[in-house]
Length: 477
Image (cartoon, rainbow, N blue to C red; front, top):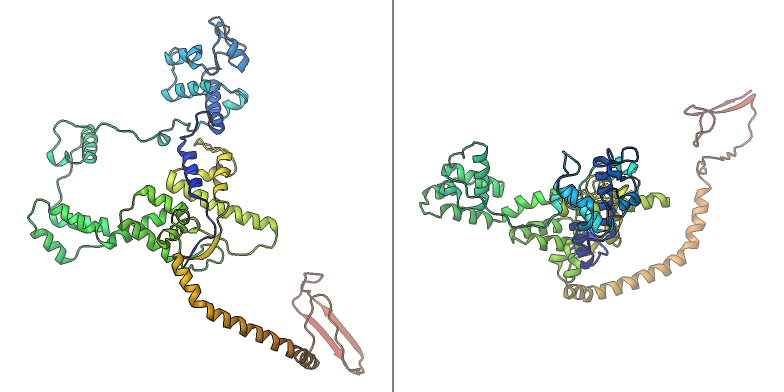
């Protein structure tokens, strides 16, 4: 059994580096983070401080147009102490909501300035350039923060049925805040139809409905849900959604759009993973580096089909530039899907420029792309090492016999080729030569004629003439 998956895949460590890069659990002084911090701080200073602290107005003799003037400060002393935010007058003023007066910075803006100063207050760009920078998310963006424990609300008057699940308590609290009341519980017939459609994508059978209606036990609903989750149809229903997220297709989806006849093992792997309730972290790791963490387990190796499950151009391009473009597009597909599916970020925007909204630099994009540099679209055998050895042992005699037959055919071909060439020349004498797009020579017997005229109305290589045929006129006396 073969599967359209990569020939060579990056090692599991590359995956861990990739996740670390985007979750941003790296050193606070990493180069890409410092660049983002600088961009954010320059934008804040340009838009919130320079309207007053410029060379013309300079209140309290403080000018913030350059790093030198900020460090020098004004009448109250230095405004900026690189690597020492606690000693920086700028930090003290903005955290006390004294600056900008009447319009204090947000918590995120204050933390951005503090982080920038703590990183050494790099000031490589001009404030004119910074003022034109489109605001974008920083390293403190909510989706980039680690998970944290939150308190579960306990709204007054919550019904007992809404108290069992923390999720229900959050929902009820929001309903109460909006002045809304929960809908009444669904009757049993409606409940089983909703649950079965939701988990399996299929309606319940009449027998299943009747059995549920007759079950008077207190845990009837729990038993129903457990039965639905144990159904093999559950993986087919919800695995389908994951296949959509990761752009899986059973054809190449490009100009030629050939079918992928061996794509089904990866599809079945996804269904199997959902039915096994596989942890999401494990699902991610297997799809990115399954052949590295389980090289002799075909049920895990097949997971790396994720990398090449998207659109693939199968049309050969003769020139080098086109080939390089095809390769770049294949790698971009892997970067795009990895970022969108696992990180919820449009990493591929940074293919051509620093991301306009998320704190992702163009350099980040190519660091990630480098992790996929060894991945190619190809078919590979899915089998354990024992199965490979067994197949090799079984096929070896057949292959040896095939080699002997090929050797005999080569000898026979060498013997008969002179006869074939001689016969071909004799046969060719009885036929007109093949038409050439540039030069054609016709030889015929002499004939008495009053005139001969040949008019070329069009040529194969789009030369003079726009006609669609060649006319020949031969007149006899």
